[in-house]
Image (cartoon, rainbow, N blue to C red; front, side, top):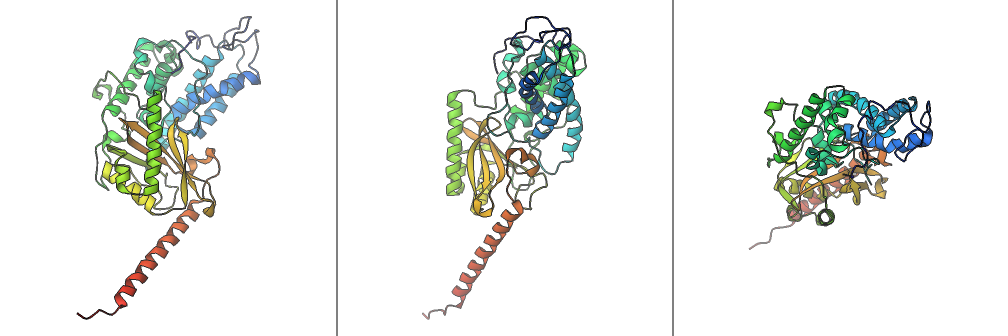
Length: 410
């Protein structure tokens, strides 16, 4: 988390107050009655997107929120602290969007995963405040855009998510967060505390291995909102993201070894990389041909290794490209030119204790359009089906030839 240097105290209350002379690098408007110009709005766009994406986990929804937020900001005169003001407006719009989005996600086909960000993730360009003591121990987890972290945020209610992000990520005092959310300071403090406990409970309760076809343990999937008394108090939230150079190097090494395992296609090669309680999750959203995405998460080292080996063994005309997915070392799954090329999906990895504890794949075309050309999945499936039919016919022919050979007499 970037070391904050300025405070948003009174920023939300005075965001539209009259500006003073002598503009500063933080964005103070130099004259009374002035509106933010295009250059100022352009500078605010990355901040607005970073806030909106953390709130929503959707690139498309975040971009819509940013557009609406910047429109409102552009129409407000005398904005004294543009960074705090755009954060306030963005968060308020995102809360409303998230409330309606959660209804749609409850009806989502299969597992819901956030839309992947590929490449450098949008950072918060302006530090908002000096973190309070109770924020420091959560900073490593809070300043994270990894898929694993965004999945954890899905366990929170919209207001819990807003209170946690405003306070623990952006450094807003609880009083300022309360103004943004539209509640009291005490309530905002309770919302953020409840969010930390809920996140800590999910991190501290890893999934257990389950046989094929068995429901995924509740600890490994987003839980329904619970009453605060049901949440176990946790004193530390372990980070899900590599934080040191050695951690990042270890994650890169694991991806390298994973690629080598894909080349070999052997179960044992995958077993060496996977944690005992690893979970493989796929998000096809019901928008991919049958058999191209798993319907529900699969848990357990042996089960996941066998599934990965089976996937590689199909001989699909595709290859992998290394990339940052959600800010972490991951892979792009790309169709070969022989079938038209294009992106098939992304794999993001959660590394715990030097092993892969989570593999999350997004193949839903609706969540990948922002990344460029997409593969023709129907064409890919037809190629796979044709190859399977050819292999099956060859095996039957070989078996028939063996059966037709005369039995040698003893």
